[in-house]
Image (cartoon, rainbow, N blue to C red; front, side, top):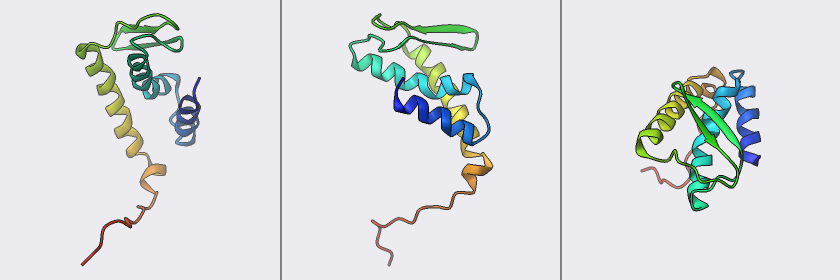
Length: 105
């Protein structure tokens, strides 16, 4: 898999919230995007179950899960997880990076 796939795994392990489902949620939308940029064909084998429905990416086969009804489910699950990550104490404790491109009066 990609560097992003490995990075997201390491990231949520560092936050001590890792489980396979969270890792899959973090990666599923980028896999949809990449498949759409590849004329709808999946680059990798990948399976995820969301809200009781299985979604399968089969390398070299067209995906059929990019309709708005499915995308809503993927994005809703992703947003829920991103909120959980943003509320994690390890993330909250990171100080803000000062902006250097805005001039203060």
